[in-house]
Length: 101
Image (cartoon, rainbow, N blue to C red; front, side):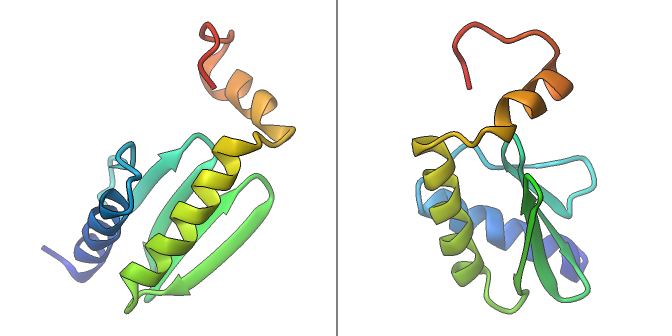
């Protein structure tokens, strides 16, 4: 397993430990999808994530610290869904799917 894939797997394991059970690897093995609009990618020694127009990064040597930051943001987004979310869902999913955010 290459270093990049191992880093993504460590992050996913840390997120699961923090209760973010919906996080999963996207096809390339380097990207972890946490929630629609909140995706983390490992590259060049850093975890990089974005949600909406905000971009963040965290040292790749600290998957636990990164997971805490991402999990905190995930919980904030779930508690107060941002205004850009509906537009993103329509773009990614098409018509709304019942009441599921």
